[in-house]
Length: 200
Image (tube, rainbow, N blue to C red; front, side):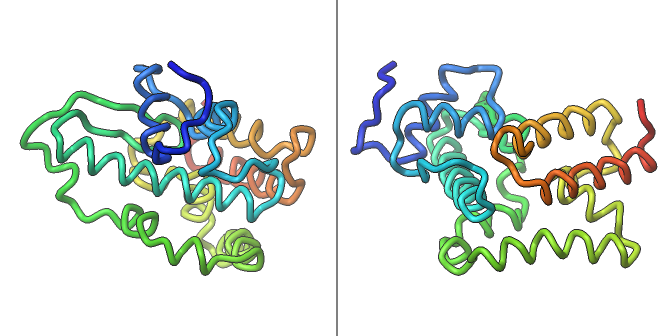
């Protein structure tokens, strides 16, 4: 595998090469780091410390992932499992309803106006809405959304929440260039989720 960036390849092609080389899958952070190591110019080559850079990098990657999922499905090459914790190409299974179900996240990430129209204030507002919703009594849902674990809250385990917490802390810790505000939000969300799901 060539580690250098090929400008003729779409971002989804770079992602597919990296996923093919990692059959067990990769986390979002690992994938971003590997794309940067390849000097991929499709994502910002800037530290993920800035909220807006982090949002744009995340958005561009997930846009590529949803496009790749559709392409793999159409060619019957496989099914792309997409989550921040593990992104993995699984074997194609005909007749699966996975893609026929309406997916609001897919709609969001395939709408490039969401990327164009979101500025630094919007990203800050998203973080602030987490705090206001928590104070308004929606703390569990707000915490799950911050952790990106709101899909199946009833099947969540304490171990899974802890794994996600560790991943988010390593991504957003100020010692690694993250923001103190974001880390405080993550710690608060973890406190809330421990009340609902136990300490394990």
